[in-house]
Length: 178
Image (cartoon, helix red, strand yellow):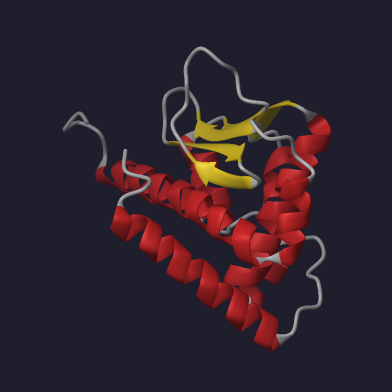
């Protein structure tokens, strides 16, 4: 990184990179522990890939479904992902990933581009929303979601604990190091 880049921009970039890694590990763990996410992922074909990135060459996340589960991976430049979600600017990714605005609101305001299989992208959105419901406090979730579903405290705490432990284990084991 250039020393001339403002420190705030660097912090935002680091935060977005961390959150994309968190989403990757969280989704991978939730795919094994959350029935609603399992159902959505099960309907996607093996070999399904998706990426989420910041234009033009910002932080990114790449996931692939294999053996019935979705896992973080590395993007192969030769193949295009089945669903490619791109934030148009780091500031847009930061505002979405710091829960200042919801994913659907960011899409409606044209802060991101979704390219690829539309039904599959809707499944991913439902997975992301479920991940938000389980891992975020209700007061944050209600602020960024159109409809906050009913979820028992027990289900929320158990799900959040499993996902946070899975994310922590993923970071410690270095599965998603870039």
